[in-house]
Image 1 (cartoon, one colour):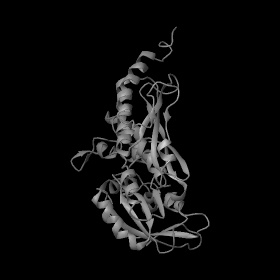
Image 2: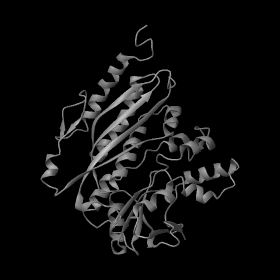
Image 3: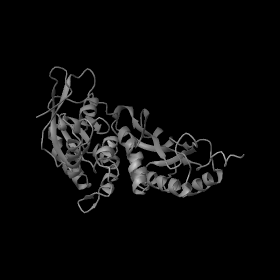
Image 4: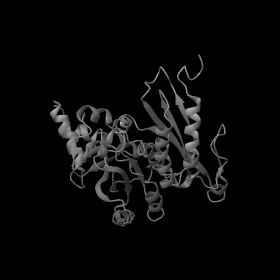
Length: 345
């Protein structure tokens, strides 16, 4: 018996890496030292040593959860990598960090070089859009541990920010405005529930198979937000991911602030896909508070939130709209009542 008979096809792995090289090269900058194939990826920080008083590295790691199952059932593999990048770079953006580089990890039961290359194609697209170098990664076959036709993808990003410019919520004040940026749809959370209530991915939804709507990749907020922070002072930022509004919004406040977010119901456009999800939950016999469940699971059309002075909110919204990122004044900051970090009105 050899390694291939044991379930690991080394030649298929070589094919996959060959396809990755060009994708990664298209994301490289002069700071990237070497290319794919070394034991470690190298990135020079020289340019930041001359422009920042105290450079701080900010890191984040994440995956796409069970959304990848939708991609494989739809046989559309080239966008899920964008989600993987977005989940990481949008997170580190919340500290004001500019993403520098990204590494991915793909695990599968049996490797298909074409499928793996399509997954990395999405990763490279997300990296190019955010000015992030795809520095390396790992593709692993786990025969007998992962079923042959199952894949998973995760990654991590490293960014940089000058310490004096870190956004940590300490500047948020009572009366600050909350500006919500439109999501591109569901993004990458809550798919374990979606897969239960929407079993037919070919169901018609606004003239297309609903599976395509579910696969709409996570919006990347890096470029417009990094441009905006040069125009107005941002006090806090939130990436609405797993846990929806209820879990994520309170995370932007410093523990000692005793502040709370008030969200104004009906102050933004909720995409129709969320109505379809809520309807599916009801049809499945859900008797809980559907609104609370939805806001505790999904972004509900708001993928990123900024806290800033009310006097700057209109300017920031207009700036973002011009960049192609719709934004609404969706709430405000007030003193916490009974320790709560979030309420709706």
